[in-house]
Image (cartoon, rainbow, N blue to C red; front, side, top):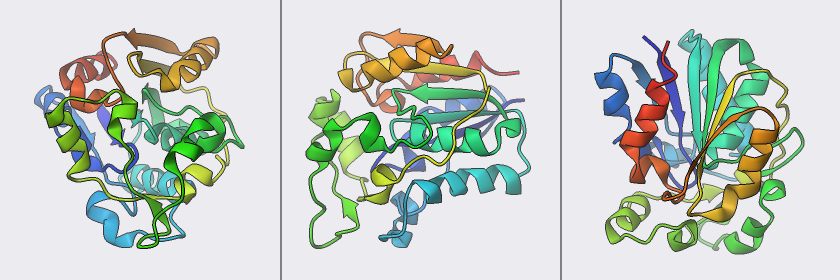
Amino acid sequence: MTTYVLVHGSWSGGWSWEHVRPLLEAAGHRVLAPSLTGLADRGHLAGPDIGLSTHIADITRLLQWEDLDDVVLVGHSYGGMVVTGVAGTVPERLAHLVYLDAFRPEAGQSAFDVLPVLEGLFGEPPPEHPWGWPMIDVGVLGITDPGEVAALTDRATPMPVLTHREKLPASRHTVPTTYVQGAASPLFDATAAAAAAAGATVLTWSDAGHALPLQFPERVAGVLLGLAS
């Protein structure tokens, strides 16, 4: 049995894995898909102090308190910032890192350092929640199907500002890595290339946009099951 820990992206929550998780569990594996502090079912905890370091601590403490080892740690989109930080903190608990069209920062980089275009795209948070951004137009991410748009936006919660402005504190590790690129959305082209240069296995899905767990759950599960011990 393999233990998978799935880390969601911006504005999202553990619910975003609802089509992937059952496929892994049906194969006999343990799956944890927590919502990060301040988002989704933990949105009541949102505020100006919630940031990248909070979310790295969320997942690090989960691994420690559940005493998890040989974990396949998966990050989608912003979740890549989080899993990179976790790998730099407790690499001994991880068997494999998987990035699903995700940030893959170096130490000292913020999400905006990795993708500067996002800072202008996000703009300033609104007065009603100055600590967090509302969801952007998901069409920018290559998501246009009305059902998929609704699935992402109906349960979206504001994204805390510090998640994208706070710098990654550490990232040095030797955990084997797989990077899955949704090439129909070009945001992470350079990130995928950098991952390949660093020795990661890179899978390029030319027909996939950014929302891989939503758009291609069976294909995502297939990649993850291929890493099972």
